[in-house]
Image (tube, rainbow, N blue to C red; front, side, top):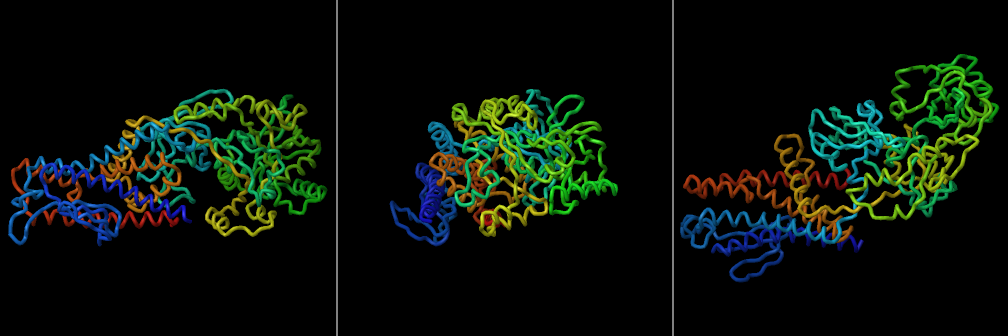
Length: 627
């Protein structure tokens, strides 16, 4: 708690510093131009502390969300115009006033460059691999993108005509009111190394469990490098993986027939109703991934249902036949495939398969194929196949950590290192011998883990002998996980950290481009103001930055300072940019703006800024508390 209080104090200090240098810019140039300053304020509202120094009232106010410099202006008692007050702001030439107004924003922009330079000179920041990768981690199986063949492991090169820089681009475009999205990249076969370019225009849509108004075209997460971190010291013994042989530092690269690219994709794989079979097909041994579907969904004759019932009694299974799973094929007593079963409701089943991620990657079986093993369990009969399919096992292939994995990875080479750090053909070779006589558990740096029987959240906590936390129940209810029979492996996974360190000019350019893109989207109505961060959001970012280290603090202070500078240059009358525009108009027309006219111009925009402040603060607080 005490540490958190310190971070809050440091965040306030950092934000106050950015306001201070902005106002000092105005103050210093104003004094150089012979303009008298009456008040220098950090914050708004009632002064908490103030002092007089060299004719200036310096004060710190109650609301630490900005500041101002009050120049000498009109003298109501003397009846003088603001343009006639000696030492006043409006008594100076337009060019002198413009220099004063420019000084604040330019100081903020200059500080941003200094902060970025310091981050760069200190070696850059450590960021999660997934933040800057171009590799897709998971795809919504219900999306048009998935139907077009884009899948986990493929890359994104351009998004809406812009070079793709990472998952933050997906989030940004997900909140824009775009009618169509253009996406292009490469479809990659990791086993062969083949790359096929793609370019699609897709309509964004809203997924059921995503934030309101957040849309997607189907990319649900970026890629990650998943390392096994260990078990919970209290609950770990109830994890399905506890006795599997997996070790801390192992990287999960394959699961149930698919290369693993993210935790989201791993969750999809685990929850797919699929099974790994070793099959003799056309006198050739093949390891295949085949759907495992509820028997209740199959269109069976009375004799076929009777055979399943007899098998159920033979293995002593307590669950009813309709609640058990099987492959959608009739299998005889020797394990040969006789025919493919039809589904009771083809449209319904296909929709269910689509929801579960069942795709064309599943291998078809044909009449005459012989099933020799389910997972790593050899089978000699239809009964043994039925018994093996009564369980929902998961097989993993992990890569043991090597010295190469320990070497530093940068944002420039992370995707290349992702592909080159695994011998994908070795993974394929190890996977292809599951269930065969030649089956081995280890091959070089790779090891087969399993079978693992995943469990539901409720079963996990019940096995641990503790009540399920309320927070976990809320997550399950919100995502409807019980309905989808969500299961998990009960372990901690961590991702790879990479060094992000472009030179300060690039950081400045990218940050300014992002700010401009946001402002232009606001102006065109493509972006709702509700997604902007107000003072509360900015304060939270600075608070979180202090908890991550000085380099993170410097970066965010630089970014916020840059945004503060650019925002103040906007042509809005109450901001520096708007005052500059009014001064330029006066200069060009040689006509002074009266005090009353100036007041009429400034007042509505001041009210507008207050409304924006309240609006963004409301949404900041809503996001902060998960509303």
